[in-house]
Amino acid sequence: MSSLTQVLENARGILFDMDGVLIDSEPIHEKAIVALTAELGDPLTEHATLNSFKGAPERDMAERLRKLYPSTTLTAEELVLRKIDLYAELFKEVTLIPGAKDFVEQSYAKSRRHGLTTSASRSTQQLTFETFGFSRYFDAIVTGEDISRGKPDPQPYLLTATKLGLDPQDCIVIEDSINGVRSGNAAGCTVIALTTTFPVGALQAAGAHFIVDGFDEIS
Image: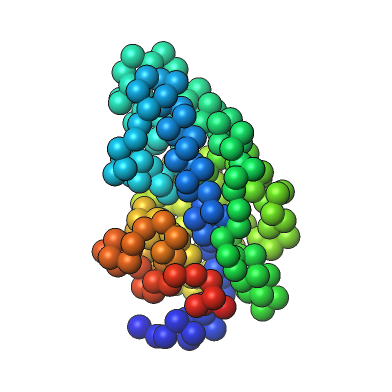
């Protein structure tokens, strides 16, 4: 494996996850899920279960909640919409990941192609880009609504690379979740994992090629 510096220099495209990579939002998504499950019955507080939702599409979350709360009369679509509303109410608590915006700007100035590959809804992605001014730096966007198989399946990153007109092998994926690392790896991309959400050991086990604590290590 080449060094991280060499990989960055040779990359034609960078495919970014959003939550936990560009914005510090994973705790807010978790708060929204806890609030939603409180409305369904007992609030979900089991750490491993909450962690398992990270990096997965909203509809997968909703289907799992329907199984965990079989008495609910809400459809999966209604659960997704309610969770999106709860997250939007809490969005003022979301901040940028340190160094993320600077890295995106510097990378874009080097004429790299940028893609966003998020499991979040289109409305959540748009809220993020409008709030933090990311739109001009991205050439392709794939949300959870654009795919039929979510992370850890490779489809999300394969679709993003296709939209950019690039071979996945020419792309770097920057991820923070286990599901996301597995997805990028399976797509054939080089995966850089940030330790913003999961510990080093878990990211290594998922197949990350490089693991860093922050953007200062890759800028």
